[in-house]
Image 1 (cartoon, rainbow, N blue to C red):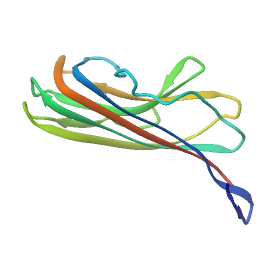
Image 2 (cartoon, rainbow, N blue to C red):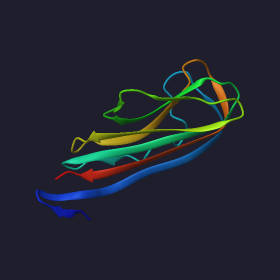
Image 3 (cartoon, rainbow, N blue to C red):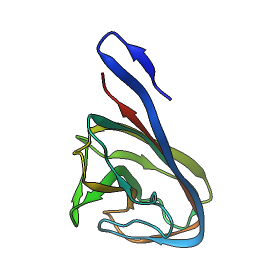
Amino acid sequence: MGAMGAHGNSGVVTVLSYEVANNNLAVQIGPSTPPGCETAPYTAGPGEVAIITANVTVFNPNVQFPTYFAPYYVTNMQSFYPIGFYAIQSIPVGGAATIQHQASVNLVSGSTYRFRSDIRSPNGIYTAGQVICRGVVTIGKRD
């Protein structure tokens, strides 16, 4: 599937993804992954990297609190955030917005990863009419 580069095989190994809508979701104060906002488990091979693009669309919050969004992954029963800062947006009552983030991660061969979305509201719980989370994780092989 990969092309021959100057230093050997490289290219896309596979693509993992999720897209899930949760209706009447209570957005929590602390770390929270809404139901279905995660990939299937993936076991890395040698020299692989994950390129993560993820977003969340929040519709019709009942209170205007800042929404924090970040991609993260779980491996060896530990959570890791491959980003420096959350993406943050304050969505007006009755409004909607999409919050996006991206990251890349060098994977450890033989380790199993599950990529997830963290959607939270540190200033207080609110209820959104609908929350759609999406993630696309492209697993590539480095030269």
